[in-house]
Image (cartoon, rainbow, N blue to C red; front, top):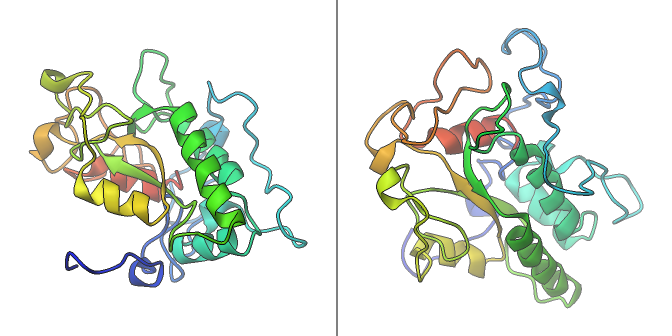
Length: 239
């Protein structure tokens, strides 16, 4: 899009928010994979993440009717439910943090880890979500206010490390956000963390990250493609 183009749910509606592939694709909730297109069994073990204290998968108390779980909504639908106060920005962020926590790099990563995430910071994410909710409550919401997003680790971010999948940049903190990160933040999106990729985006399978492999959540014996395999796995698994 041009430099002056605004980001809106309708312009991105063919793709899911971090948790869905859009209105035309009815994928199962991957907490219980079944069906001919999915591997046998449940590769996610319930997607129970550790380290996010008090996080609940409940839909919350916004609105009179129980909304769909955020991970099952398209980006456009999620943005609309946040604007209509059927979902809250904080509970939505908590929902995705719980799903993502089981899939972050680290020495305690479980066998069900797809290797999608390189870094999470619940404090940063929830602070952004609280600010987004305040704007929603004040009627000052951006077009994507409160919708979670996770960034491929080649895009520099002030609030999360940026490694480009390389040990050379391990722990690096940028003093500024990349333009795409800044534009999405201006539209109101809430950052969950950074996603795995081939080192310096040179690869086509995400097997060349210096930190960990990323696995295809539909069949963990296969790769998700690349170099944006962390992004692909996160969307496919409703993270």
